[in-house]
Length: 369
Image (tube, rainbow, N blue to C red; front, top):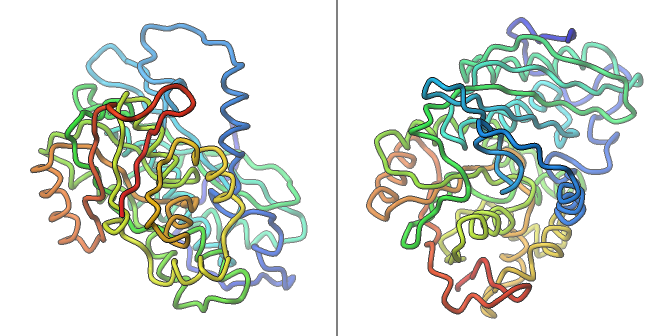
């Protein structure tokens, strides 16, 4: 495979290229909010044939963050890919966000990203210097992660899109998945919610650049920070919170682990102005798709305000890790992350199935006031 490698340091560009075109003017949906609806995706995946291989330890069956293949020497090969349209107009910043988001899946599995390939879709209406800035932004975050950009692939497309195919390695004794949470575990969220709502509000001209910076600063923070903070702690399960929202990814963890997750709504860290923008109706379409698909499995307490529940279903781009681990370790993890400047919090607990309901009436996530 040949293509762009994104070499050189690069500098953050402006919000508009020489043609006067803004990146966000070219897209219908932005970031992880551009994902297929979870219902449509589940239908497609459900019809795919399952090819059996005893060395494939993690596939797509449990909606995990990456696949893991046993190398036979105590290590697993972790492979993942992620790409999306821009949610910001600065091409360098867009590249940083997309790369940070793609790298996250490897850390969510307990691994370390090692090699990356660029995936670039680029329209002819933009100057080539914009492509260079996008790749430079991605390379910048890969360098920070210690991950080598070894090549890539590019195509012409009417919408710009960028991301990475990432490979890494994991010590199989440290492998994390989303289906191994245990009853009694505390749930830690390492980043605040609100990226989808804030980027939507900014695109609508109702949020200033300072308000957007709250979201972009979070989106370019590598989940390497959270992964390193987990060292020496007894983490049982992990996933990163992205396009399917906190509620969606919590449902996936609960159902794969055969338990119920209780979330204390008031403990969930939220970005400044996220609820204000939600009250104004600045909700990305992906949030409605998330609520349609996951909502029937979420028991939302009547006292939870609508704007807060909207943030809980908000599709996150380059969101934080959701980690299940014993209460004592959870408190240590939160302490370490707050010392590192992260707004981490214990947001809930894993509970047994008693009272969860049966079949399609099962409550996978309970949200408490």
